[in-house]
Image (cartoon, rainbow, N blue to C red):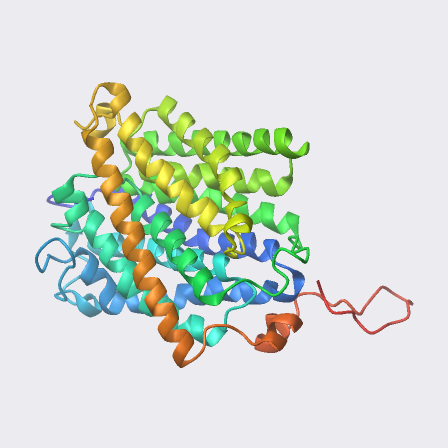
Length: 428
């Protein structure tokens, strides 16, 4: 992601400004997507976990995160320095390639924000909000920032030494959030009534709206990673569209064959799975490759979301099944479908490039997944033993909206004009 130029390009800058806004919109979109998937008694808490992540990660990123991820390297390609801590030395005249450095830092900030917010889906309905306020900034510094430096930072061991490819965030965004979500699921344990009570989404229209906003923002996420208004951005844009569509269709085909019913939740989840998988590969594979990546993710992830019932880990909103599995699929398939017309040299196995790239992609996937899981598991255990990570049984049964935020998303007591008012039942 590093370039060199003598002056800012107005077209590149304008595009990246728009892309940054699109990526930021993804976090409110995620809030709606997750909010619709939980039961009515926890929808506000779900929205809050995403929105508060914007504020927490922004502060951490500006204070130290950006500098540690993108400023120099302290050795071994593991972490950057603190020369730009507090954004010191990053002024409006500074350039990162053809765009202002301040804009590049803000663009990368929006990636960090949504990555932290993604984890909330794995721990929905049972996490103490106060613990979440501590977890997000610490996790960002200990997990997201180092992995970002490995992949995109100057001297990063994955991107520049190993030579693995990741165009827009399969490793630092999708795999870290999915592996971290799995770790926290194991620390927290399953929700009350897991595998016994029906825990259906309370608002499928909200889910579909959130998925639509995510898809819209994903064009900024992927095409914006070209850091310019150019042909590479156009290719990433089209590949993103294609993979989202085949992901949606692949998931629906599985549902139709397995269950006899294509569902709205399946359509939304399939589109997201395809978008997750194309994230690392959108700027490295051809259009045919993008179609294959999306289809593979839609089919495999539709089965992967059921693993939690067999293996007894309660991934509430399928972060593991969609983001971890989808991220792994998209990152590994670069080793098959990488096209030198986009990569500038590296080729996948199916394009005559041999097994070397596939091997490098596998090493990167295993390293990032293991690191994110181990650090997050340790952090989760520490928080659980000190301030407490899981909400009380009473709070979980009543719902976090009322017990934590003293609010409810819906007024269940009012039935209409002239109708008698009865005491509201406990929301599902």
